Structure formats: structure tokens, C-alpha cells
Image (cartoon, rainbow, N blue to C red; front, side, top):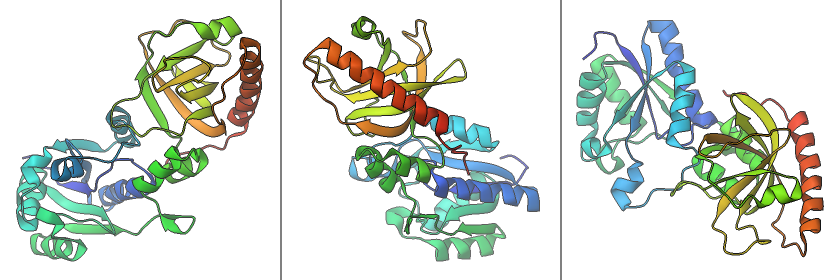
Length: 301
């Protein structure tokens, strides 16, 4: 066990939305006030997967979650959930927080539960902190449009195509980073080269349709248009993301490229000809560029 004392953040952190980031910010307050080192406690799997066999779809990939945590300057520690799922509140506090993580402070959200069968809440956590001389900071709910921000609300917003709502609750733009797979190069036929990407299993499926987006290539942001779904103008397609990067030319096959959704533009439509499809893509591109250039800065908490 390290000699330095830590400020441990507790929660699911499955979306790293504004509520989660407020909890992490509390750890940095403890660092400033008490000299504790901020540490984000993560589990190797979603608790619901271990307890019920099915986890809710992710709104943030683990790789991007780790990048965001690293950018805050906090340390990340992953603990196997199977190790703790049958622990009582006291066992979890003593064996994990005290012995394993050397907690001098604990930060969590207002609705945090812990211990076997979620037997403990804030009262139990406060009692244990008092007993062991550990500082405790409980974050109040972060509301948006009258209700607490949650991964469930964000998931529903993404599935319903309400990207501005999802982005407002996330505190950043909804994004995914996937390997570019080889398509059939049909986009080039209409003057709009595209990148094709499949989604991870268990990742939230955005509403089918066309989106204004931003795509990151070599650290640079480009305006883009993203079609998500089955592409009805073509037959026998699987569910995927197809993005036309405006103002970019180059071969991105095999690379991991990040796409950020900005706004839902329209439903998928089956066009009668390539000319019709080409004309609509140019309209989508014009609208997407306008949204890209005028979008507000969605800086994180």
C-alpha cells in the first residue's frame, strides 16, 4: 500500500457525464485542501452485468473514458467487481478503500449505494468515514431541465436522436472511436468519400438517420456528415456509421478515428437515383458545416 493518502471517487462513471465529473472535481478540492491524491475507482465490468447478466448499453467507450480521466490528472484504479460484490459495507470500506487504496477522503454522488445487495447508502458511508477518520464529500444532484443528469437519460436521448440534449448532460459531445473498415467505395462515385465504422457490441445505438458531426484526424477537427443505420439506398447493409469528412482527403482505412455527433439532421431516406442521393448529400454537407462552425464550446465540467 502506498504511503500517500488518496481522495477516492465512488460511482459507476459509466458515462462520465456532468454529475460524474462533479464527483471527480470534489477529489481535486480535497487535494487542494488536504493534500490527498485524486483517484477514480472503477470496476472491470458494469455491476448490473455481474448481478443480472445484462448491463445497460454504454454511452462512452472504456478507452475514451480512460482518456478523459487521464486528462483530469486523476489516477485510475480498476478493481474486479466479482471481488467486491459479496462484501458488506464495512468489508468494502476496510479492505478496498482503506487497505487497498489508502483513502484519506471519499467523494460520491448523493444517491451512491454500496455493499452486498446495495445495502448501504450515504448514512452508512458517513458513519464508516467518521469511524476511520476519513473525509467525506457528497455531491448534490446535477440537474438539467428539471431532472438529475443520468446515464439513462443520456442513453434515451441518443437513441431518440436528441443529440443536443445528450451533449448538454454529458458536458461534451457524444462520441465514439472505431476502426475504419473497408466499404465498397461507393461514396467516391458521388464526390463524397466516406469512412465506414461498426459499433462495439453493447454500445448505445443512435437513432437511425443523418447527423451533423465533427471528425478528428491527426488531432484536427473537421466538419462532417454521418449516416447511422442500414443505408436504405443500398441493399444488404449492416448497422454502421458512415461519415463524409468535409475538406479532407486521404486514406484512413485501418485507423481508429473519433466521430462526435452534433445534431440530428434527418431520417434515412431511400433515394431513387444516385443523382438524388448526391444532391441530398451536398445539402446535408452545407447544413453540417454551418452547425460545426456555429456550435458552442461544450467544455467539460
